[in-house]
Length: 264
Ligand SMILES: [Zn+2]
Ligand SMILES: [Zn+2]
Image (cartoon, rainbow, N blue to C red; front, side):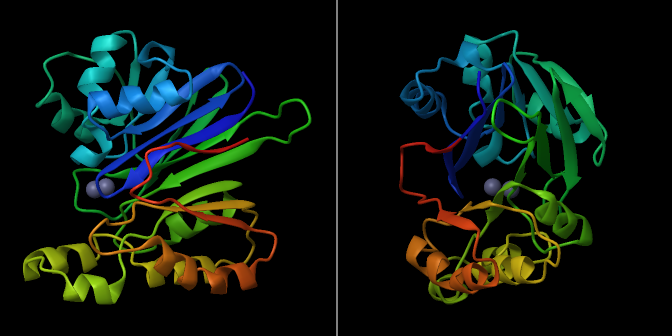
């Protein structure tokens, strides 16, 4: 199985991707209902049983709602999460997954992949992002894929991991003006904007512009809000990042798109 990274979808209504490397296939978040999850996997020619493990970032439904369906089809699935996230998710699950618990901030190994959990500031029990180190394969150097969504602000740890990623998925959740003008209640707007909410387009841009040594070759902007953002707005804001780092490939993942976005 050669290296491939497929984003099945990333937006405020669901997040899930598949990473294949060296004979191992892992899922990052399982935030789509069963039928949508299965349909997306089918587009890649995959069934739920073809997934070796899933890494869960936090207990919000847009990151784990598909876990039950996935486990019904694939009871042997290994489910990685920290203790507090696992506890919250287990409370709402009938099946008991083969939990693989880790301490936030540690690096662990799964079938040749080195996986680092990255603490992120967000209003969940113990939310994390992930950096997955994939070994070198024919004609390719080793590559690091980093998955960072749902963060209220950029911490030093987050910046460090953005700079080290070869392929980076970073949240660009909302446009300030669209959020202001939206009909959302004030408390929700404050939650989204808060230190433990989500990154705005400008905040994501500023994070990236602030990186000094930066080895990323491919950047995906994800977790866009369907109500408070547009791909064209993210694209416009990211022009400054393109100018800052001209060898960077930038893709804004459309929250309305059902087809996987892939890179090899
Ligand atoms: Zn969340
Ligand atoms: Zn989310």
